[in-house]
Image 1 (spheres, rainbow, N blue to C red):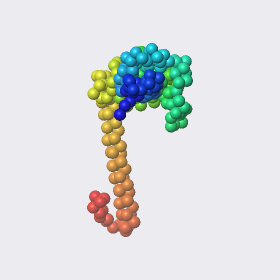
Image 2 (cartoon, rainbow, N blue to C red):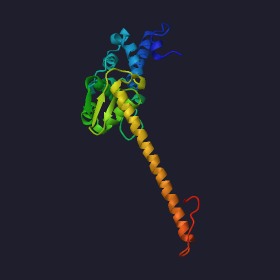
Image 3 (cartoon, rainbow, N blue to C red):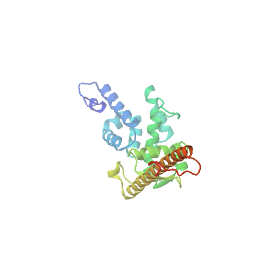
Image 4 (tube, one colour):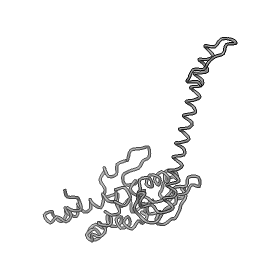
Length: 231
């Protein structure tokens, strides 16, 4: 099965159609979720000199995404003119986020990780054009999915980035792995505490039922023997 990039090299296809397939491949790469997989595709397309020669608008945004540079509103608006209606559709949810704006937000967040060692939620939000809470959510999602290396300190309201690209626990550096392990241990401690609380609540409920039955059956000045469930 041929992809858009494969078709762009097919000599049996007209030159204009090959360029259209190449442009479609760039568009798909730009709109894809930020992460290592997209970075590999961007690198392949960037090395194709036909993009720079024949598709200047596509190449402008492709180059910035390939080198993880921040995209400006003007550049995004210019690129949006070449998109089709379904590529500008709103994503599910309460926020008015399109496929393009979501891709740009994730890219600019990844680009910010190359510039900053750490950044506050509000400052990151201003950089991305959203509020601090939304910026934290985007960062948390990308970190959780392994598309961004870093960790979040919610009490201080800061995000700490790690150098390098890639993702997954195997790619984590020392500080990220330590914080990840601490998070796992904290989660396990919460689960264990919840289990203990649930067990205590069950025992209290059982004792209440037993005490109620004893009081109902007991007579004045008569010794009452607890049944085996209450002993």
